[in-house]
Image (tube, rainbow, N blue to C red):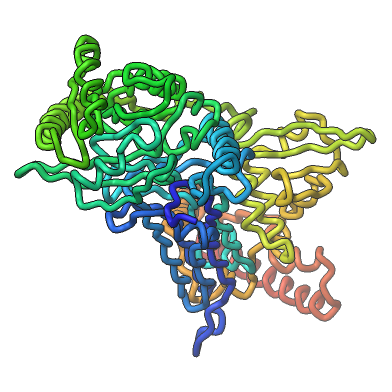
Length: 613
């Protein structure tokens, strides 16, 4: 089996986020100093990076499961958990990342070549070609890593849960719970290698493509005297003075390759990024129904049938518009050279450059090398111009504008959706889907009643309860948040779970409320500016009222005439009011004697006034 793997399925998973911590700070002279639970650390992400040192996807075939480290849990004393490190997956330059679909091969390695030839190899190649065509049709391209250093996050790490320090607020001073960390993203991806080469050599089996690559470059591909010797693409670097370009040898094609004959078109993805297509034609073939011109048209027909399934990178030239070079090989044989001279004018009439060469005698190789180098330089400049133009015309995606929400539809229709579902037995339930509700459910510890109440409050503020009522939900109906195995089902009871126990004003019923920390009358509590301002205005208003009362008494002459009796019947007398309230007999007697004395004093005062007059 060959060690070349250009297509593999990898199962990736981001690291889970760490859980938050629920802790209360305790120290000397401060037994309850408030919540100090730290946040959990975020999980690491799985990142695919194009690396020039990577040459194959073989490592991912033997180790197809890759998981990033998880974040650690938060701790007390305001200690946050550590973040998980990102997992870097190096891949060769030119790798395309696909989202795996339901149509996959047995082992997900459609590009893994197998040894052997003949009918069995053709059958395997046919199956792989059909599967590959189905894959390209249904799969979604996630990233095209065509340059060194390009990267893409294939599995995002989960966010760490918040500790009770971060959950504390003015109304929830001491939360007795913390949020759980979110699980990391988990998915299957397909890595497909598309080699980066400047010139692609296509042709029938045993046309001399591998021999040409070994002659022009330092590459040493396998060369033998039987068809389908080349089972994997071979790359070679060609130097022409101060210029350099790469050349790719693609496994041989035959008529019907688009339907799976031979090796099919499984490896033709490697010519998608090439700039020049060179047809290597065998002029010494012994088959009676073949000639150079018919071979050229047969291969072009196969390329045209498969052109719709081939991807075109940004700024690249479509395959049908790329320049062709005709290489008539095996000119060291007299009959082959004569045939090459005979068909050369036919190809020149098509507008192609034609070269008659021999890999055995090296005839015509120098002219071919420099011609390919010049053509590659021109195509590189053309592709650069197209890429620059494509960058200027690229589409800028902006977020959609949301309409203003009214008071009756706060959170409805934007952050979640509710559907009423029913099975065959007549059982129905309401399914709530949305990024926020599903994320909140994953973060909730359902073993903690306070955390469950916090989730209910968040859902109520989002508008889930109002939407359920609008859908016809009643108390006791089953409600599911999310779908699949991670869905959370419960019986809907909004009167209990949505904070109604807080409506009576009982401080003991409020979630996250610790009376030990609520020192309203204590000396440690500082009044706010609003409270100070209100108390100041109350004090100034009372002072003004007293002054106004004293001013009215003064104007009435109460202070100027001592003989004037303001209360002749003693209605405001303290002792009489005390008697009216039911004072004791002793107190009543003392009051009588006090009143008699007061009346005698008053009489004596009257007599003294009369004598004075």
